[in-house]
Image (cartoon, rainbow over all chains, first blue to last red):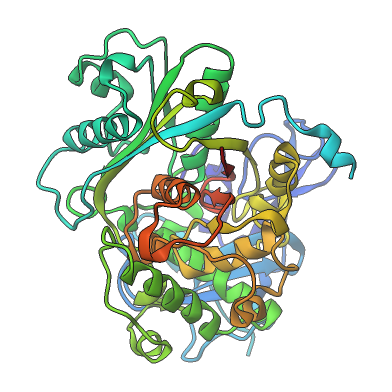
Length: 121
Length: 383
């Protein structure tokens, strides 16, 4: 994790899924960083959001990449801020469905708490 | 029509006067410096020039190869008046030549050799290279690390959004292999069918092995000089009618809401405008094919068909021949420059059994801007 993102990860470690918003114009931004791309100012605030998202796409890796084993990785867009597209592991015994609502699962990774995704039911 | 009035003063000012290759293999057995020297000398030989004529050297790399400051002295080229050591991968492959155009047009150098030398199979496994930059921390811990996985994610999105089918990707692989069969330089020269495609193993769904390019050891070089000078050189000049590079958006940042549109969609009007040409004028297209999907999405973003219609367009067989060397999928992956070299061969009428009859205008493109948020492209014309 880099300096711009440390607080986002710290909030995740505390069980909170947060969206960084521009303090001046309210534009959400993800990944976390100092400048707002809309109004180019530096201030921001954190808004805890309901950890719910919509499945946009996914892959099923049949071999390990980057030290992580085979498995399904999803890209989701947060229900509370569709501008925020995030990746995570898919924690279910079936394939994801396009557009389905999913919930965040906070899982312990090698060096930090990660945000994975599972079906709502 | 207004765009045609904006034709750049750089149009057709520079030309490609020579092309050089090393062998493409799984294990070159030599250093990237040796590969670079071989390709540079081969390109000069092709142009009828010598190392003593070179006053500019340019490459791009991602920490995997040798800089112009190493290649120059190794070939006795001291004090070149211009050089470029561009950081970046496939997305900047064509920007290197674009910048050489600026150098020769501005008189900073007269004879620039652009090269790319990689041992992308035996030394630096390009396909294993993990994402870098501030977004990687949101990807790699989940096992999303390799370019292949990112492009697979985009391909799936295109399938979901537009109904693109795996057969469309398969047709791209099959067609490019058919060209490679006719290309003595190609690494894969056994014909394949759609059934072979469907039988090839999954790597990361929706991509199978035959959706993926060939990590390759090899080098390629191009001699860029002024258009006037090529008149006195021995090969048919290939004019650089347009050279463009530009931005885009990465997978996540900037609130990018639709990643089925690449940076190429924004660059294309500028590129065509510079040449005063449009997609209908393109006789042969060499489209960056790290994966089959990148060809399909560029057919849309470079205006050969509408957004979302890439699948049916591929199935129809319409449009100019694409990746006539076999592409990275079947000739080999030299990170972009071998697309430009093939375009030159086609425009010279020297592409042998795979020659596109009457080819006058070629489009050659870089990685369309997913991995790094930038892309670049050239329009070349027989002089």
